[in-house]
Length: 325
Image (cartoon, rainbow, N blue to C red; front, side):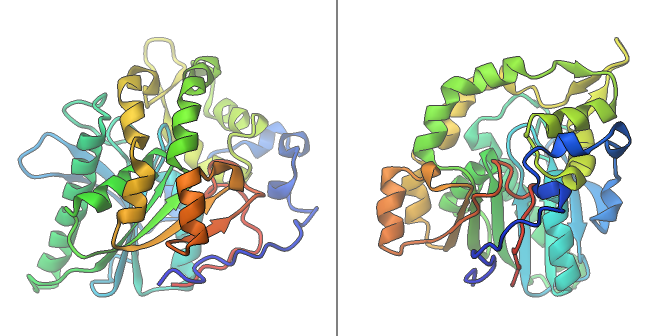
């Protein structure tokens, strides 16, 4: 199903491409750091309130006319939002009109509002994911007047979202789940990186004078290597405070560190034991831990390496990547 979804043979990077240049910020001027609205990439944006809860999730979707076939659900990483998938979703929707695409802001992120935005425990995140997908499927069935209608679900998750995707799949709570795509998260390396995550969060700016400044920071630090993606994704991660008239991060990750370890603990075993079709996309072989290295050599899952990208693979420049569904 996923074979050939991404073409893994990468041609030489075009030296004239700003997105591919290693010193992208050096080629840009202040006028290049403008923001772009979500509707250039998605068809619709709306909020879904889950029944019997106080939780309302912001979702972005494309091809909502599709009520038969595949439903791709995208889960962003910690600190990011649904709009980190903008370029990927836009590329898929322009190639296919028979695939439904849905992204949602995780609790504590973007425009999603819940009863406890700081509860990023893995159990809560899995419940959010499964409940939202199943509710979304019920909406589709209701609109199509077919109570048995269920699209084939493929969950795509990046970093923290990849961990949630794996553990949601393992929980078997999602109806008609067929596939799993995990982007740049591996148990061994993720657990090792937790010690530095606190210092990384502590060193990043606490606030910005403008949206333009936030976009510029993301590019100058190499957090994102693609200016087009930064223009649409970064503004959704910050909000203007009435207290100091500055832009602050929406996700308060530094207050959720008690949950970090559980996001990734046991991830390799759960990924490998998943019965669905699996694809792992990494920015480098150094991400692979021992267990996954052995399993990949045994052909237990498909692996794609994109060494020209940074950690946020879906936002960075993807030369030669052709999507097939």
